[in-house]
Structures are given as C-alpha cells and as structure tokens.
Image (cartoon, rainbow, N blue to C red; front, side, top):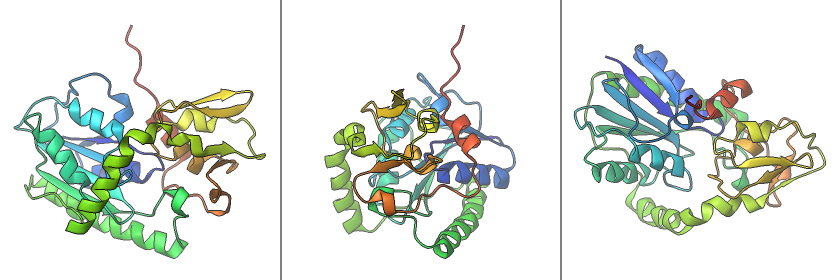
Length: 267
C-alpha cells in the first residue's frame, strides 16, 4: 500500500528521516512540503506521513499550514514524525489537536531525537554523540516503519507533563515573534555573495542586496542559511562565530536546494 511522506527540513534531519522511512516502507514517495501550495493537499496514497523538525517546542508555521490544507479523508492513515534534539514536548499533541478540529486525526505520532541544529544555543555536540544519536534514530525508524506498514493506531508520543506545560507556554508566547527573529542574523567578512543562503531558504526569506544577504522578516527559524553557508559567514547573535555548524552528514547541499524549490507555476 502506497505511502506519501511529506517533509519539511532546514538542516537535513527530516529529509534523511523521510528518505530512511521510504526505504524501509518500500512503496513510498518523499515529497517536500514546500512543493505543496493551496488547499486541499491531494494524495492518492493509503497513508500520509508528516515529517518535520520541532521549532521552539512546537510546530513550524509551514507545517501548520500544511496540516490545515490536508484533504478531509478520515479513512486515510495519517502519522507524523517530530524530529527534535531531545525535547519533543507536546508538539505531536498540538498537531493532532489541529487535525481533529478539521475532522482528521493522527493514527500514530513518533518523536525522533537527532543532533541539535539550533546553533544560537550551541553546537551539535561531540561527533561521537552525533553518530550515536543518528544510529539510534536509524533503529527507531525501522520500528516506526513496521508500525506504519501494519497501520497501527497508538497514542502520539509526548514529553513529560512538566515539559508539555512549560515548553508549550514558551511556544505560545514566542510563536508570533518568530518571523522577525531573523533580526539576529548578520554576516561577517567571510561572505563571498555565493547566494546559497537565498537559494536554500525554504521560506524565500532572503534577498541579496549589495552582495550581502538581507532577511525579510518572515523567518521560520529553520536555520538552513546559517548551517549550510559554505563560508560559515552567517552568524546569529554574538556566540555563533565559535560554534560548530551542523547539517546531516548523509544529506547534500544540492538535495537541500532541491527540497527548498517552490512549486512550479502552472501555465
């Protein structure tokens, strides 16, 4: 039975997850959420998976828009994988509640811990720990694929109660401020105007002016720009010049650029 895997990614963790799931499932297609425009999102697959990173302990705006555009077919098996750095909190509960408001629901929801890519709070950690997390995620993806293939229905995974309450509160307080958080980005002398940041941004939030990137204040904090800059010239705040960059080691820049491409214009 066919499965469509819709993913949203900034540093490749969710792309790798979707690709790994597709390999395990067999009859599955991997589709960037950035290619989906308008409502409803049409799919002829028997199952739909939504794979995305947790942003500030909640759903990225683009994932919210995607969930709101899903075709209303309660008979279809819907599942989600929330990629996070160790604190999924109530993100999957948030997604399920949003879908239930439209007459849909998640048949299952899984959290997947991966190396952290939120560089404003530090680097991804020692390489050995990154490898350990990726291998643990690879094993869990096998279990997720088995549950999806069997169309198992189970409660969505979530963090401890204290985390769900406190971090969900932080998410609600910060959500409206996210688009303008790009005011913290700046460029140092290493910038060579290559334009990778503009091309890779899944939100189309970056322009080049006088050979320097300019952020347009509809950011989603995916951090693709800072993590994939070939010169490591993009910074955020005061501390990132000394932090190591991170993107998934099995994902290439070209794959990320392809994933960020907007939908083709119809004639």
